[in-house]
Image (cartoon, rainbow, N blue to C red; front, side):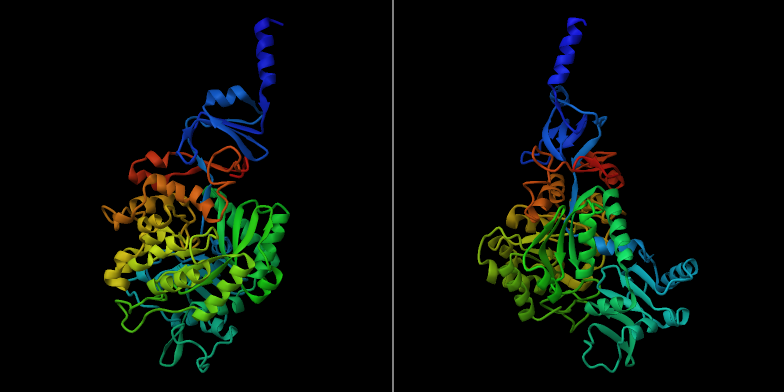
Amino acid sequence: MAAATIIAAQSCDMKQSVDFIGHNGVVYTVDSAFTIVEAFAVKDGIFIETGSSETILSKYKSKNICDFNGAPVYPGFNDTHCHTYLTGIDLMSVDLRNASSFDEILERLEKAAEQNPDASCLVGNGWDQNLWEDKSFPNNKKLDELFPKMPVVLNRIDQHAVIVNRAAIEMAGLSEDDKNIDPLKALKENGKFTGVFLEDLCNTISSAVIKYTTADLRKIFTLAQNECFKYGLTSVCEPGLDPLALKVLDSMVTEGKIKLRMDVWATPTDEFKEKYPAPYKNRNMNVSAIKLFRDGALGSRGALLLKDYSDDKGNTGISMESLDQFRSQCKWAYEHGFRVATHCIGDRANREALDIYGEFLKGKNNLAWRIEHAQIVEKEDLPKFGQFSIIPSVQPTHCTSDMLWADERLGERIKNAYAYRELLGQLGWIPTGTDAPIESCNPIYTFFAAVYRKNLDFVPEGGFQMENSLTKEQALRSMTIWAAKSTLEDDVKGSIEAGKYADFVVTDKDFMNLPEKEVPSTKIEATYLGGERVL
């Protein structure tokens, strides 16, 4: 053997064997210096080194070498508010998004019923009366005419209101004569239900009408995981699972059927508290937080405000539970080591949650309690996030979905809404998510909305309240390393650095350097979880 060949062979033998090498890419590490490298090596599901292609290829060898051909590579995206359970259900339901009228919804339902003649009920998701010429809530008269016997449940886009037919109302056992039913949550005309129900009554009806088997739940979570991988999500926060859904998810994680990294926030029922007196971890799933609600949604006028809605005098929204009940749940979480995540849209809801959090947190801490949405926050309440180390967790596409009508609800208070840059300033960082299936779980849309403050029609020109936009670097951090930080996991994921999970995404275009109008069309080419390709 020639001397040169011998030297080359010895050099190759000296290289460390790894499971994966990626090179010739534009790799956004999202480390503290926002370093961009070309290559990295992965072993046992962990990044072991990053650097130039020359360095990595000279030090490591692998049977699995990927030439990125100059493509952009990012840390795996992390959606900090993604209802995987509801996303799976949504994929199995009639799509009512962007319907221009209630009549169009009825047409979609008729078509779905024809295609599913054996269905025991009809479920639809995504209607939004704000898109209709008549922006008032519909009634169920035509729904009853079309479906006199089969129960129909139609969820509003925000999942905080439903319209159902009489068959569904009767199956749920609801009566107009029941004096215990909150009139703010069950709309009536001439003493009769219109079919529109809000907040917890949505769940009351849905749970009575829609019965999911264990097999259904497994399909729901499988569909949701596939949807997440499709959009480059390797981690999510699941905000609110009941005990049965949690049990099924837990078994699927144990079986290796669910690989998505999940931070699950449980609905704190008595059953949950009895079974989980302390945080629980199973492989890639953490159950270490509870999900609470202070109010409903702005679109259905359920957000809890300090003053009346500008377009509905006398209405200040809906409080989901008494302050004593809310305080009691926070106390249980504090004493048992669980984090708390509370849904707060309105300014009153945010103030109440921040103040009660403060009773337990007292000052700066590392407990990672959070406010979900933090949508409308009075200026005087903003410093409380920093004072008590409370994380503002936001969903930028809510801003661009709501902006065309939110001022009708809020008037001059709109200036206190969707204030992402001001919120970021409280802790110096901010995590983002989508609230899927209320919005698409595509994190590219999250990035676009955060940076440009426009919808996918590129409206409004110049962006909406741009003083609260995020920079491109901030937006990318918000859905990677800051998202990981929000669940106290930034030491193991969220960036492409040695010692962290090898979760990464390859896209067809570099959205960090694209013209504005090309950003939303960015596609995911590959999704890797622990060095394993899952898309």
